[in-house]
View 1 (cartoon, helix red, strand yellow):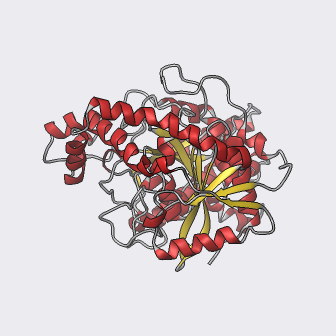
View 2 (cartoon, rainbow, N blue to C red):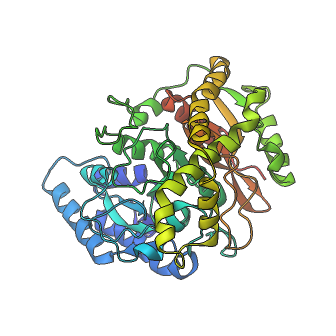
Length: 450
């Protein structure tokens, strides 16, 4: 790697950085320093970070370099900087949950997922801005493509930091659309794995039947690397999928036996997409004709209720988990959060149980799609990032898949009026590897559509 290439280290993907580190072409200190320089240059505009400690990050990078120089075996993320959403506990940084109620809150221990990152050798660069309690109340982060637009939420800072080349990998969480929508708005790859794929111990609990940890990168291969490093089983999280999971990085090296089969699904949210998004998406789907099998697949009529069912579960749990906080701090929580808490308190236990129970029945109705198709193709958001910072957009195109516990990925393959828009792929619960293989294929085969 020559000097000019080293000047752009912040733009390396995680896998590119790992190769360069392994080959001793760069040091972790140089890589972390490049990211910190980018943050210093752009932080006043993007405002992605809630907490950052430059000296601690550089010290950790130097320690990683020393281990490598001594010949020690290095973890898969050794020396690579990673950002952590500020609802995930970190003993080295405050975790303030996007709320003044918890200003200065300092966890005594790392979340399970942070422990795994450190075990893989990652350098925890800092904490990224989240919305209020990972819900709708916006933080300070702005969209890197247009600072007058929202980056989406609730994983606002994580998506923006990766999109702006401030860090190659970042953790996010999703209860409705909090990973996929910011990925779409910011033009990065965002992955929400199957429910239960990653431990949530030490993470703010919003709605346990829905809460899922995933992350951001600038390539599908990097998301596979990230998930492989954080998929360890945690007995204390009762929602976790038991057993060892196969490597997603290895799965991506397996050639596809045939071109993918794709179900183009216009979900119940389709009429809410703006005209430009619908037109761009129809055009994108049409470009596959003659190359791969794309089937426009309607959902059963029962799915007309699914968006509301997801809300019943989420809002009921928000009322249960955040209600006491809002009651005790009425002047320090948003009007929107209080409104949703009030709505959540109107749902009976029977309504909640029915909404939770319907998830399995509706997922079973989708199984026939995956008999003949590898993935579902559907928009990641209603349109491009909306103007203004008072809202983070609608999760309408995401919440139904979260409710069903299905893995999703947003790919930055569309451009509408020079702004990014994501293509969302959804996979069967038990087959994240196939989802990522199709996603990787699609990124190779399709450039950005205008």
